[in-house]
Image (tube, rainbow, N blue to C red; front, side, top):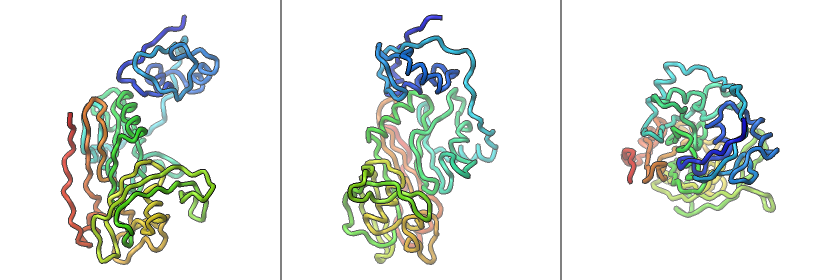
Length: 324
């Protein structure tokens, strides 16, 4: 069978080449794809390409003869009725392209060492009749609650991922921190680097001369309770691992309440919950089908109780909306 030419569709803009093949030729393994790329069998507009090449609408992909053997399917356990019901209750917005969840504290987004139950392993429960399994386009830490977006098609995933990568997504977090930052508002520009330690690998401020990852966060104090605890609004302009937690503890010297990993004993206050007080309050970004999507999530129970205890006036949670 001879090679064929395939044209990149308009809804496949910015899709990675390997994901394009996964979409159109699921029987092709990653190893076989890489071999075809190394030997020049696959080309984009007549030129050699890499697995991470980003595609543009109208480009032509040279597709060599494909194997008939299906690729092995991921070994995912069936989603229990209880977990499926839980996930459906987490949905705060849904249309043909996007699902927004209110992720609870304590639920891991993806698997890892000693993590068997996680959100990514249960996403089949959120198909809602669609052919494609929804897919993650960004992440939240296990102990961070709030807005998490899923894409319902490969095309939507590519556009949402491009929005996050290009910083077109405006993310707002709420945190309760121990102490009162000075100044009360500003921008943190502190590069981060991986560090070892007794608590395992973690992030920290990059040392002078160290090749750290660029990390920027805007912040402002919304309210405070006798200088003991402050309500912070934080807007990250980059998406580094544990960025907000490190910036709060190391740059502002006010660790997030409940964050023993980065704040130690100073992050815990008598009479208040020891759970992490960090919440992804809202996301605003371009919708894959045009316009702007804005989604907000209410405070999780432990933060709601802390806000009430401290006397902070909590704004209502606006409904999700898409403006065209």
